[in-house]
Image (cartoon, rainbow, N blue to C red; front, side):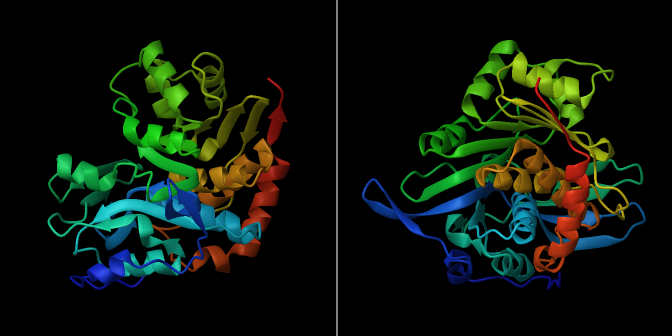
Length: 349
């Protein structure tokens, strides 16, 4: 992605729709857009690698990576989908970031412009052991939190699937409730481990508010108080059977992922023989493809294999890949999908 430091889009650019065609529906007498996938949110990442190299003005925050995963699935599976991002941005959103959204075919109708606050922005400092530290460059307070996760607006928002990253100890209950009341499949991805085990009541409340929960293995262990002997399969099954999550997708990096659903358990390997560059955003991409395949009514094993496929492409890039990548790699994506699908176990449990 080409970057130009200091360039600012106009308010008209922010609010105009992207290139994707989006059909209109009526909600409470008003016309709004129904998207196949609505993802939250946007952060501008300035990435510092362990060797000192920097990658500035990269789209992050989970939403763009989720959209990328959805697009990998759509192109490789030959599906027509419309997608949108929900966030608030300032007039300092770099042109390169806005261009990426438009080139990716993202409907910009759910992105609001704020003339008083800057776009959330952070340093992402990556160590050679894979550890990543986020340091906010903008003031992290209530205003920025509202920009990252705007309230649900039933008059202007409707989607078949809503996906967002959450702090599992402080979920955005208003957004979850609004999306659920609007009839969306609600998918959440945890973005950090809890400070301690959650109570059974807290887990039950969350499971009643979402349709899909996707932590990584470390996060799954933390929220249930498990030690390092608990593997991804055990964690996913516990989330389903003991805590009521109908769809529990536990991601375990190079060990693959496990999906526990009402009909059984699927276990998929990670895609092999890829050039590992940066793990950041792989979980988002996995979830984007996974829920898109779920919305397309594909089998549980197919959904998981598509998720692993999308994550493998994110793994090969620093920051979100070029907007053209999902189209240019569609043949390779199909090949990777078929390899993973053949090795994905699907059992009744």
